[in-house]
Image (cartoon, rainbow, N blue to C red; front, side, top):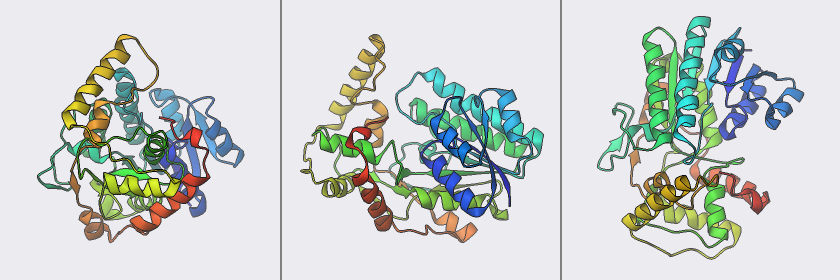
Length: 334
């Protein structure tokens, strides 16, 4: 039995990681904001909950106390919120957790980052040896800085590993498949680049890799890109959602630069009028859903002997079965 701390435990990936640690028989502690309903549910199941903010050293120190393994998933996962929030949570929060882990001599810190940190290089197959590269977007760039902080503390002697997941999906998803399904349902799905590529990353596979990183000696000081082992085009991916929810497929294309210009205008108007809702288009979304990036996961198999346990086809089926059971009004949560 291991004593583990999970930050971001009430989020999509974090919730799956909590369930996996329960099955493994580990003693679990989570750091959650006061009033988090999911945290109350976990507490009712016997999980130790520390209430506090990832940016508060006192709360972080309490959470890390008497812990062997820290899974750091806490972060702002959206493309539309004030820049200072990204900075405070993704950057300052990561430094706070790293400092506490170093001071408390934890056995391992696992950072869940994103493949976005490698930038937008389309003419190569990206692997973990590539330098980080900016998107000019707050989510991607603050996650990049957070990963740099983790490596900084690794050089100070903290045993760290980082996973860079691609497009994470699965039951409980709130940021990828449900948003596409919402757009399809309401006839709002647009394409702005033919044959844009997505790299699906089934959440249970990701959790399995995270657990391997927490134990494998060769994982220390290493980062690993993760996806299901194959890509799909965005059009094909959405067509599978269309088939699952029984809607007509979208064939509406607009030029990439038209979409990007529209996103810039919308973002400017939303900021000008201080709207709290998310614009229909953001520049991050246009870049993300219009990319043809390529990623390799060979390192995980080569160094750790790990391959995704579940295929993309099986993971997607489980996700579509879950999606059909959810309330359609809950699809737009981002």
